[in-house]
Image (cartoon, helix red, strand yellow):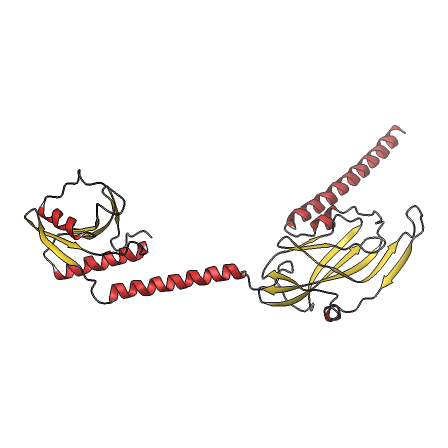
Length: 332
């Protein structure tokens, strides 16, 4: 007798364990599936919905559709819906309705395409409604192949969508919405991008003309400094409002001209002020007595020299700060 009780107890224990395991497994799978589909906007209704509960809604509740944070109008289509005629009554009734096609809805302006940007994400939220068992989003016509229906197509045009929601105890309903895919940039962005492209093209053309056009006029001040030969001093007029990149192109072109025309020179000083250039060449230039500023080393705007590694070109930023703009090292 004692053995029979032990066997019976074991069977009950195993059965209880199996029940707990199955419940845990089901919840675990549901949670795992929700996490796997966490990037889908519908998981709130599908996986957090109160399964088995009966909705008090008179008609199938509308889902909420958002694209880029904007609410999209939704129209209810055909449905079959089981409901309680009164809140505290046990009896139920089933109602059905057939709607016109979504194409006809567009014609009758029941559906208004909402402007959206291409490849925007669609968020579908069922608002945690009771008893939902399935949610499906379809781009119409249904034979349209898309990698992910939860992303609006990239191509411009008007697109129709169907949402099908099923309830475990209350039936099924279809919903429709429409989007009008526009260019991904708004007019202000487009204008700004177009202006930027125009500026870039103009800058490129100007740089090409400077590099491959006629020589840039410069004034040769001296071929020696303080009596030491091999140091060429020139003056050059630069537009102070010119783009910094263009200034560097001008300096590179000028140094290229000087290297070509004065192959024996080892050092090159380019000045923006002819008087200071002559003072510098004579050896009478007093660095300490001259006020230092950012336009350049008191109007010296470039310095170049040769060594065993080749030619180095420096853009003078201040008395103690120079930027190497030699080919391959310039920073933009």
